Amino acid sequence: MVALVSRHGRSLQRYRAGRRLVVGCIPYKFKIDQALEVLVISSQKGPELMFPKGGWELDETLPAAAAREAFEEAGVTGNFEGELGKWLSEDRDKVHYMFAMRATEVLQQWPEMGRRERKWVTVAEARQVCKHPWMREALERLEELVSSGSRQEPRGGGGGLTALTVNSSL
Image (cartoon, rainbow, N blue to C red; front, top):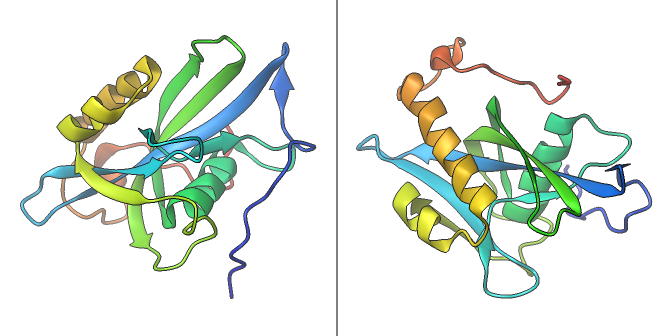
């Protein structure tokens, strides 16, 4: 049984040079026609759509934190297939680390299901709704990563993408 409770508070949050370290991912899948779709979620602060992300905590690796955020905020699990990069926020108070996550399971219940909506959209639609330039750049990097790999289901090799496990460290 999996607990359907999100972590709260910032007592375990990581900071570097006064900046909060945030980690997230772009969950993606391929439709039957091989079209790429990505998962966006609603913000808790308003109607803005974004990718799952949140604070990197002291007891986690980067991929473990990204996996936790994807589970808590979007109700999705999957395989990490590459690092998309890191970006300084517009306010320069956060550093965002982002990963590509090939979705393997979309849960019917998840911790923040009562506070967030999720939606699978095309890359073009995601590009239109992403408020922050760094999110659009991460999306572009996802497209590059996916186009360099296979669009078939992974057969252990990950289709040429660099697979990251939840326990790996960067």
